[in-house]
Length: 196
Length: 168
Image 1 (cartoon, each protein chain N blue to C red):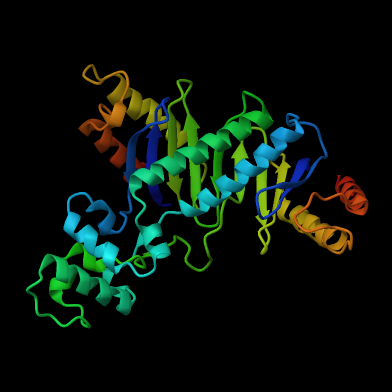
Image 2 (cartoon, helix red, strand yellow):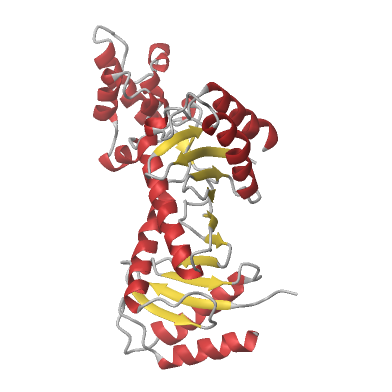
């Protein structure tokens, strides 16, 4: 039997500003509005950093982009051995002996090269689980749930759907500004209540 | 399961030990020893944005990782209460595991997505390796500025063994 407790929802705009915060269940500590703003900004920064610290796996040196490889080979040859008469277009054995010749910036791949690196998606602590969903336009949905809750992506998808329907289609909503849409609040509340 | 890297941070936010199992491109590790080749990279590195990405050293990575885990740990404490612990996070590329001792020494490990929770493993590294070979070493200083005392042969070798034999 799984517990389906959604503690709270936070929406962060693409600039890192807090545009929506709502608590559904008590269980997490309540913060002041200012603290929520700080939390949103901090998370926005951390999210970008978690993407940039993705481990880079070096590739075999021969599989590099030929233009970059020959380019750096030429440049390093000209520095380390100016008397060399090698033609610049063909990477030579001399060039591959030089460690720098094999390492233009394109010689790494991510652990899962089929998709572009994302930032933090799930965070686990002893007491809660944070799921972050970033839309194509950079808006982030943060859902705080019970650590054992299943099917979080279903909840996330529905929330995004409600956001698209009741916030984005609201003619009075100004982009990137705090969400004050009564119908969104209402539908969100009743849908989440209906699940439990 | 693949372990990418492992870091220890002391209570002064300094990285006292780092270890990566899949090396970065050679240009970065040979940076200090070969100033000439460093120069050539700079002149050759296509667009400045791409160069900036690749030029980040392992030192900078350690600082970024510390900043990340520190912020997330504080966030977890703020929302879950003082007794809450940040355990791990994952992106679509890697997973980061975190363990903090009561003395504020932080153990961080980056692995691939298939790995299970590494909290126990990090605890084991602390109890069986760090305490045994670093803390109980009479020649090791109390604090470890710049990694002094942590980078001893016994610790490094047993860590290597633990990661390559026990975890994979």
